[in-house]
Structure formats: structure tokens, C-alpha cells
Length: 228
Length: 123
Image (cartoon, rainbow over all chains, first blue to last red):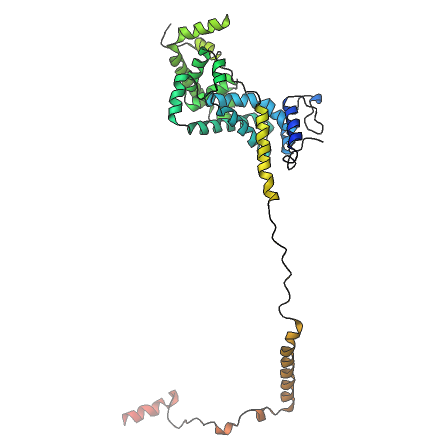
């Protein structure tokens, strides 16, 4: 029995959950799935087609493939807010509900990041300004205590400077610098021209250079300490 | 070096030390939970549909024998018409025309009498 979970999903939640967890844990022993790791890495197209047939194993493989990238973008745009995970889940839920909306598998990553950035900016824009002001002071939004403790002061200060950038500059910087996307691809994803994204990047870098200059010595000292 | 602004190398060094966000444990379980709850939320809709009771077939409002008087009267009218037409005695069924008053046309009226009317008026 494969992992077809359309109408049978609610009827057999335990079995499906087990199969999904097994798939996400990359211990893919499920039979009947389009995703056959023994034959090599499945393409996005194959996984998408299988997901459209409600193949949970294939969908889990897609989630595993892109969840980190999507989460990183959302995390940057929401300043590490706890909603980042919720938004990331929402992105994949939208994909699960209608995989057919992505006509070309090559566009999958771009689609995921575009949906994620739109959701993040829409949701964070609706947050009260009090939280934004506080976020600038403490370095991030409403991050979990565990997350905050795990990051050094230096990291938090750099994150705060990035978080203070306007949304579009932040997205451009995230895509090009942190996600290693080329300018052309990032521009296509943001639906702007290459000149526009270069302008956004230049302004973002200029703002960061100014914002972090005052604490340059402390920041580099912190980096040196971490190195030891 | 200008202390009021970082150079590109310094900025890149600092950016390399920005946080590397990580998904918390159990992300996939929570995602699956949402998938399942969403499916569960959708599923009962079809199960909770209460069908209407089957409608009884509508009976014929007018049974065939109700049309017998109408058919009989039509047939009688047809036969009567044929009889009257064949016997050529239709006038005997009509009222006597002798009592109908004849039109009194002794007065001069109409366009053809116009000259006479005008002459009478001048005299």
C-alpha cells in the first residue's frame, strides 16, 4: 500500500502519520510511492507529479528538500519571530492543497520562496508597531528564548541590523547573500528588474555599513572570541 | 580607514557571522498534524450531508376517463355539423329575418349626393 492520502487520510491517520514521518526522516521504506531513492535523487518534476496524486512520501521529500531554505527566508523577514515556522508550514500546506498550480517544476523553489516572502511580509506588516520598535532594540522579533540563548551577542547584533532594513532590501539581501541566488534569479523571483535588485542590494549594504560601523570593534572582537 | 562606515570586506565578514536559522525539532510532525487536521476538517462535510426524503412520484392529475364528456361533446358537434351541412336546411335553424328592419336610405347622404345637398342648402 502506498502513501495515497486523499480521502483516506482522516480515516487512517496513524498509518499515514507513520508513513509521513518515515519519509521525512529520510528512511523511505514505503512502497508504491513515486519517490524511489534507490534509483537516485528524484527530480522536482517527478515529486510534484506524485504529490499531485496525493503521494505523501513524495510530498515529504519535497518538504525535506526545501524546508530549510524557505524557513531561512521567512526567519529573516520576520526577524526570527516564532511565527516563522507557522508561515513555513503554511507555504507547504498551500503546495499540498494545489500542487498543480506550479506548471514547471523548475519554478518550484522560486514559487515557494515567493509565497513565503509574501506571507511573511503580509503577516509581519500586520503586527503592532510596538513590537517592531522593541525588535530593533533587542535584535529580533519575538524569538523563542531557546533561540535567543543559542545565538551570541555578535550574531544578534548583526541580525538586528539586517532586521532593521526595509522589507524589500531585506529580501534582496537574503536571496542574494544568504541564499546564494544570482541577481537575475532573485530579480525574477521578486518580479523586478536586475537594475532594481542591484539598487536594493546597494542600499541595503550601505545601510548595514553605517549601522554596524559604530560597533565595529566590539563586533570583530566578538568574532575573534568565537574563533578561539 | 573611515570609522563611520564599514568597507565591503568588513561587512561581508560580519554578514558571514549572522545567525543560521534552524528549524526546531518536530517541524515535520507539526506540519503533518496540520495536514491531517485539515483533511479531517474537510472530510466530515460530505458525511454530514442529510439527504432529503425521496420524493413520491407525482400521480396523474386527470385520469383518462375525465376526458370522456369533452370527447363526446366534440363528437356530437361534429356529427350535428355534418348532418346540417348535408341536409342543406341551415336556414330552418336560423331565426326568421322578416322581423329585421330594413335600412331607411331615403335620406340623401353620401358623397354622390353632395351636389344635391349643396343646392338644397342654397335655396
